[in-house]
Each structure stands twice: as structure tokens, then as C-alpha cells.
Image 1 (cartoon, rainbow, N blue to C red):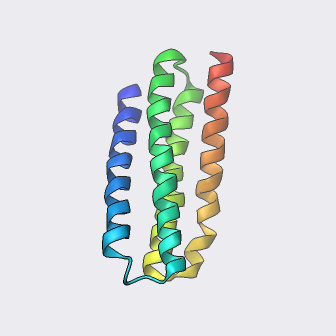
Image 2: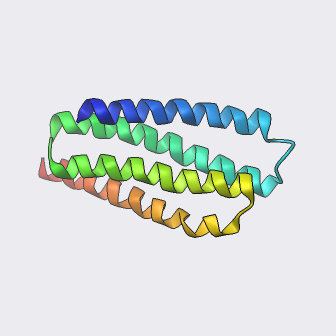
Image 3: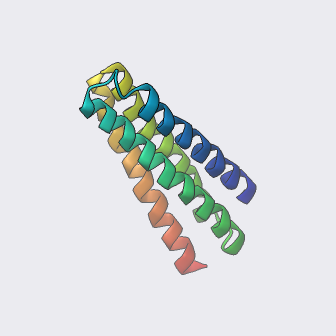
Length: 122
């Protein structure tokens, strides 16, 4: 499982860097400043949680458990839901996408809580 989470973390980091460059160089003149800030928030959270997935991969070698694995899957889901909804919101202007974003935030919170629990229990 640690290889899976490490690969996901590296892939999300790669995509986050690419999206960050795209936002800076490709979207700066075509989005309103508020929409660009929304896009950049998605990139920031994606990159932070990509590193979190690398931490989950390491934790899976130290404290292998269903709790650690659940933390990894929740972190990956959080990236897709939280950052993905912010990208869609910024690029399409569909404001209803903002209603989905908090679900990704909850995934992040649960993931970090489970990761902490794994360390304490480990």
C-alpha cells in the first residue's frame, strides 16, 4: 500500500506543479483576480496534501493498519473533491461547485486525524 500512496503523492505533486504553472502563465490574463485566487488555493491544497500522501506512504511502513490506509484514501479523495471543485469553479464560473468543496475539506480533516491516530496507536 505504501507504493500506491507514494505514487499517488508524487503524481498529485507533479500535477500540482503543472497546474500552478498553468495558472500563473496561462490564466493570469483570462480570469478575474478572485477566480485566479480560487484556482491558486486549489493548487496550494493539492500540493500540501500530495506531500501528505508521501507521509502516509512512510507511515504505512511504520504503522501499517487499516486506519493508515483510510487516511491515504481520504487524502486522495480530498484532493480530487476539494481542489478539483475549486479548479472547476474558477474555470467555469459555476458557483454551485463551491458547495462541493467543503466535502473535500472534511476528507482532509478526517485523513489527518486518522494519520495522527495511527501514529498514537502504532
